[in-house]
Length: 147
Image (tube, rainbow, N blue to C red; front, side):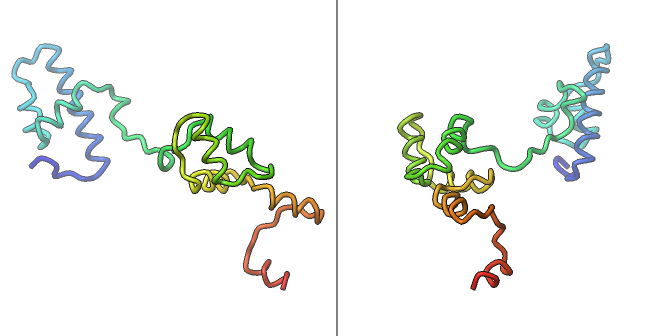
């Protein structure tokens, strides 16, 4: 019956019960062992071994805010410095990161980082400054206005 409960709520309850059983065992209950706990919680012995020495705060699953970042802070600084400058496209930025940190980064990675941070390459900011306009959001209505 190992793995019969799939909800996060039931996993948290089982982890807390496993910790409580471990504390009772440490207090002197000799009949409590891993097999007994696994049988009572309907979990595998491996699951009990992984969870019974944790704190109560470690019982809850931490959900991250998306994928882990692919670029380090140094690489993000290089991308930020190269924005709004001539001859600093995404390919050149990727080459600069490779030369400086000896780490290969795709030009699309720097492009995605620029897009997520709202950074623009030189040609976009130069043309907007030349026209005296501020950055616009490109929507279908924007394209119809400029026909």
